Amino acid sequence: MAKTYTITVKENSQMLPGHEYLDVEDIAIAVSSYGIYYMVFAYLRQQHNIAEILQQLSTFKNFGKPPGFDDLNRKLNLFAKVLTICEFATIVAYKIMRIVKKSECKTTLAELGLTRYYCGLGTPVWSWFDLDYFPVFHLFVLYGFLFALIHSKNCSQISYHVLEISYHATLRIDHLKSLIESCFDSNNPKTSYKRFEKCVAYHNEILNLMEKIDTTFKSVMFGHFALTGAVCACLEKQIIDGHNAFTGFCHFMSWITAIFVVCVAGQRVINASESVSDALWTSKWYEADIVLQKCLLVMLTRSQKSCTLKAGPFGILSYRFFISVLKTSYSILCVLSS
Image (cartoon, rainbow, N blue to C red; front, top):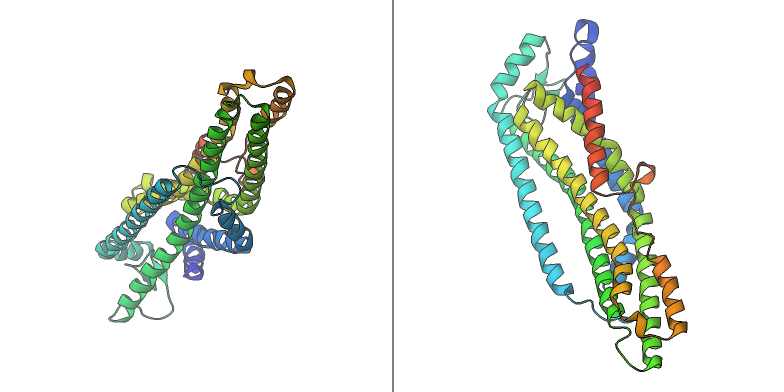
């Protein structure tokens, strides 16, 4: 299907004199298709590391089960179901609108002099044989629906997986903070030392986990950012031009939601890692002996450096990064509109 869209883009740009006609929606779909292929391949290359991360997040032998683990699982499962339902409904609405506007699409293509194009599918598709009869057309509609559903599911699943892992990782940080705050409650110095050693070991484990998460998803997020700006710019141009604005809006919201989900995950990791130092300050560190207070300074110094999730060389996933994606898409939109 992605190859078909590429042929469509090529034909659109070459069939008219002066190469004046180029449908930005075709470009958006082609870029989306190949971009998702890259994201999936990059994700599959990291399956071993992802399995290790999930196993580590499911092991509570050393430090116990974080409070609220089961409740967080229920909320994330509910969010996954809502996301799946919204995604399915969006694709159904997209396909129905394509079929409804089939006659209008045919008229437009006839005016442009584009032959052997068939409407009612994901985009006007060029074919060397006739598609517009039963059951061939209906089979192609079904194929296009399944293709869109699988591709959309792949992208949203990767974004959701990053969100899910980040929430469970930050739950460990919340657990660590509760241990730190109760670390110096005992009047026995040996007990305080033992508790503090446990907190340091827990902190090191969390830091190693965060580093592994960042390394694992860095290349995937690189592809996500690289194509989201370009795809959104093409879809914004489509919406502004009023050409299949509804379907363009559905496609646009899908990509914006996917990038926003991973940016929420990155921002949560930053906020949670920075809050460790606050837990150290609010603990009864002043009741500990001098040696333990000096050890506390080392942990305090390390907690000043935030844990992050990166999108390759482009930057750090956060709310600011999400704004930069919107700015990038706007810059490309200005180029397309000029």
